[in-house]
Length: 218
Image 1 (cartoon, rainbow, N blue to C red):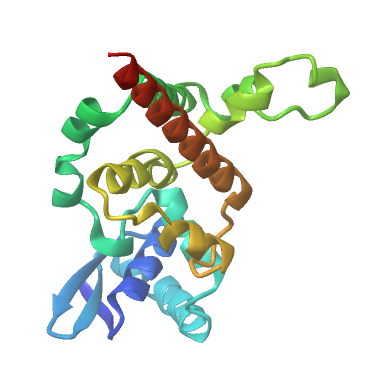
Image 2 (cartoon, helix red, strand yellow):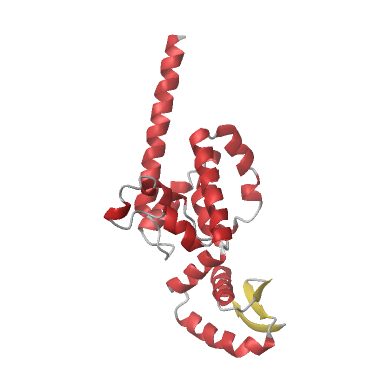
């Protein structure tokens, strides 16, 4: 193992590791006090890493590095890799309705199919209508919502927001705001997320009124 460098920002260090992974280079982060050391196992790739590191330090917030984290499916933001999600499944089973459970199951199923059959084949069947010839394929107007292109993408859209909503911490909102103000530096389908938020609020309003009516009838 070769120690390449040490960075004071662990998040940026992890972003660089993700980027190098997309380049076929495996690196390891080792915390040392306030610094994050980057170690390389493949000695023969040291020159490649040093060149990439020089470019990275000039533009550490470049979208290519955030995009690499999405492609590799890393969950480095907020460090939500374990305990934060352990209670998600029981809470989902207890509080989520049939629609939420059904959409979650469809998203996971489509993600598995994309892994088995390839993104292109699944997209050809489920993607948003590409032109008038596909407008009559009614399912395409909604089926594109089930497409996710990395594990992080799936977790971001399915597990993390629902975990935050079910736990009542309101975190699903700091992501919507971050998307609109481009805080994350990555492309986010803000309109789709707002539509989901509005739909959820309307469903909650309808369910509340329905429950109240049933209570009055008793």
